[in-house]
Length: 408
Image (cartoon, rainbow, N blue to C red; front, side, top):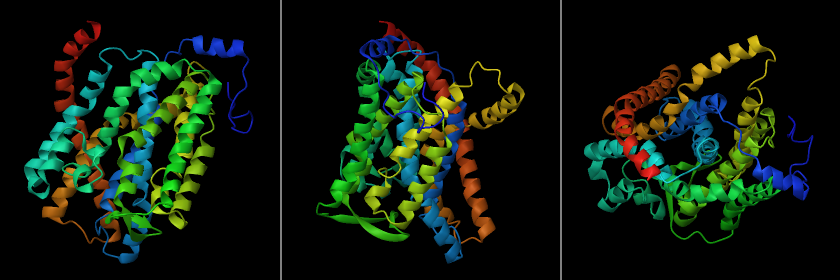
């Protein structure tokens, strides 16, 4: 098992052929809910919302608004990358107990489609005239990520563009899981290194190519200043499903290594690397590199370390009382982690309402902070209500049919 420090053992472990064969034949350990990761999901979900709100003039004081904009505006890119990596990780984690079967894709779609259809309908009913028909159809069918046109992939409920990547992940996951789960530890580390290299080198290579048509958006900043971005480069790096699913594959590989006990439990190192990467984004990096290239390594390390750290404590009696108090505190926070998808999906409808009707901008510092917190709390409340009165009833109605289909 990998020790607590990345520097204690080689990153790629050496194995004999006999050990490699034994590793691939080991059944996956029984998995439990990862409360550390569930709790950690709340911070990036807040960062995405704060990033979207930073497009508006939340604070009246231009200095305060500038600080808020510079801190939270680029964090949305990094938070999206976190959730894409986490998608692959979580699917692999739950598959350790229940390998993907005939009903896998249907069960996963049941997790996202009720909220997607509801939020799409909400936005279209209230603001449909703002969008072209082609964009509305593409977003309804979750095909928007395949079109290199921001009028299409940002149409209707703009954050839903990531679901194009989720569909690709669901479609390829069963085959990818079977393939990766049979690989040796050494092979998995090599695969992970190759995947990370693609994520990092793609925007680096694109920097050398001509831009073509560009467009500007409040999210595109370099060192706090608005910049124009090449349409096709932005789409290829940030939106294109086949590009983003590489990050989900990274999450899959990390999860398999965690399940085999081959991942570091050192949380502080990836956290420090993530902070350093964000500082580099603020001080130097061009926009294409801030979307995922600079943070993919610390995000991958952090997600794996959180899971490995928690799994290492299962079944141990060390400092039981202290760990019990900490575990209860984390559990209380992690209970809200399951609502982050709803938070992500409902926020844009509320932002459009504020943009078109309420205009709650130009606040003092305390009032602006309160507005951001209240906005997040509203999205949490909406997600809880949606989970209870929309998603749960739909799941109860559909699950028997999906189960019957899976066993057919």
